Image (tube, rainbow over all chains, first blue to last red; front, side, top):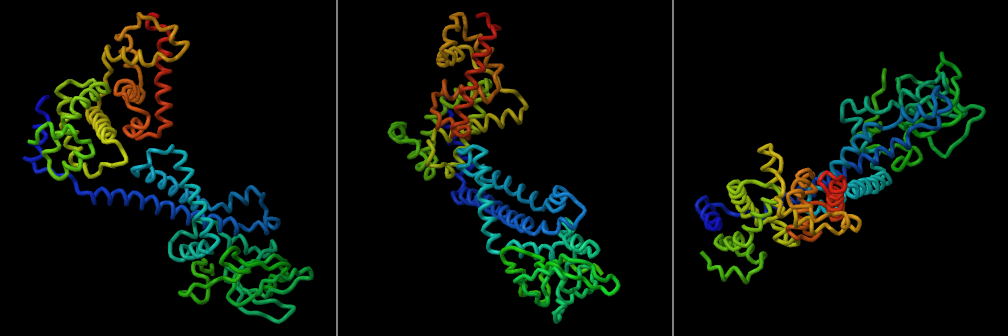
Length: 260
Length: 194
């Protein structure tokens, strides 16, 4: 083995072997970091939508529904987003471990770090009202997205149980409140109940609302409202006013089409 | 070829920079590490001399191709040991073979170095020969064997072992501690005639 260095040098020269250029390693290094960053970002967006879904899980109407709080919790869990978030947190962990410095840290610190980053960024995204926009956008653009999410429209259109939801299509003079088209396409006259609880929420045409009340007339489609609430709540949904995106002036983009 | 005296007063890192400009300088790095790596490969694999030589050539060519990836925050020795370690693992994976054991003489060296457990110290008899330790090491999982070799035979510190095996320093400490514990348990079990 005394001549191994000569052999190596000879092989290098004869085969014309050259060190790989530095930019290739730098590119690979930055791609791994970029993949980790993108994974954290997607995990954050997923967390923001999870927050949005939790805030809009209709606990106010639970007493009108034949289900236990636990059943309601299971039914309204945003499973799709929880799976997406878990996948991307793990992907962020995988990428972070494959950076040059990744091996220096214990696996659980890398997981905790990527999870914490996703929670903080996701919380920030939620506070800026972007979560609802993501939800609308996917609901409108991605087939089957609505099928995979819990069906609020169906849950909240049960007039015989005292629940109604849909779009305000015309404001009416008191004691009537407004005319509403529910998510099944049925029009209703919504009137104030004796126990009506006024809110600071203003009912404007085009807004989506949830109503707790009583079915006054099934034939004439009159519903008396005790409480009217915005359909979506949270940042970006100021007092229930739906922020209509520029490419759809009438209805919030992504809201499921009415089932006629 | 560049005269050997020119290599001697240069650091590994300087030789890396010079080699990138002119491959003749690489001879200095190869000479500096060929015996160390041959011994290391033998210690963790027990491969035959011819196989080690082939593997060594492959390792030096890989190192040469990847010189621009050498991270200056590491010691060059840690980096080249890491590549060697990975190549040995790949060799065993592709050949579907199990790593062999450390020879008897080196087993004695490891044993002498880990006789720091107080209760163990009293129990270890002078009858415990290198051959016995060789058998004990043969039973050890390769992850424990590698860390013992790096610590006690290659005399690397925790930071270097961490950089070579790409494991956190805390994990290196845990592995070493478990490796020693496993050896002690095997000795206490009495299967080796103490």
